[in-house]
Length: 343
Ligand code: KG4
Ligand code: ZN
Image 1 (spheres, rainbow, N blue to C red):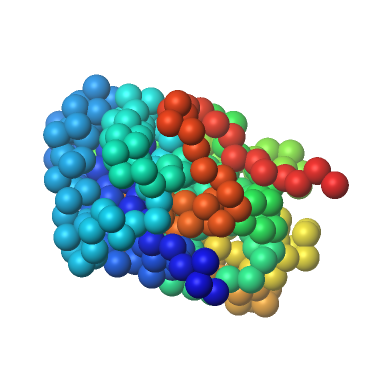
Image 2: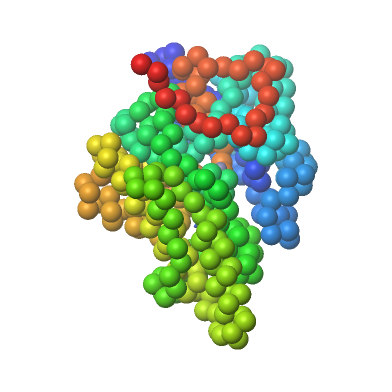
């Protein structure tokens, strides 16, 4: 349909990646540029919020220019400006939001404010055609959420972490093993050489049928294990620690996600967020879904971690639903995504 043809300039600065993309009709990624700050934050073993904001200010205009250039289009060709306004580091979000407001105001284009977690879910739409409903696990550095996705604007939160996010647990365990930041990719790699059943780390199932998660216990258990081994002067096999930690946390993530699908009769599962790049998670989810006759969808690596292409997808659907933002919209650090329709 002609009126649904929309090209969006999308901007994402919620954490430590400065991103811009041009996306057509919520699917076709004409360009996606990411300027990573990993080298900056590596030194400190994690994201330093003030440094993240400063770097976003330095890089954002260049990243936007590059995204437009690579798309072969100009600002004039855009139908809207999409931007992440929540949740995230508030100073970091404000950089993207203020720049987007300025562009929207100067160009007279509508501004669309998008939810970061929704964008991690919608990253799945770029490369897949997924019918509703589906279950989606969003597992990232700041979030671990389990959703029942009934429609673009009917997303029901069914479970979430009660303490640390899964990516945070990966990063903290990597830090205690002196593996650097971010911890996920390096633990994922080392775990392949280790024995996942060698150390019995606790799995937090919580109450029966609970879809919530808890990762602070296993994080402490890994620390206790390392201290105990050091005190006894025993050798620590880093690959075994990585494999055992990973196998425990992934088992909980996979089984809870599949059990939500089973209990709701939903036959599709998708994953999103930085931790959905994890090779063990993908493999285990694929196998269990196959056994349960559930279709499994996942974004390619570049759309798992933070990027603006996924923001362009979300902004498209918000735009079609008439959800544009006023120029006084503010950034919000914590904002739960739960658009359950009230019947
Ligand atoms: O989605 P993301 O880029 O940023 C947030 O919104 O948080 O996720 C970053 C997180 C980090 O904690 C990083 O360690 C984790 O994703 N991560 C992984 C892998 N790649 C990135 N965790 C496990 N396995 C991976 N392969
Ligand atoms: Zn993210």
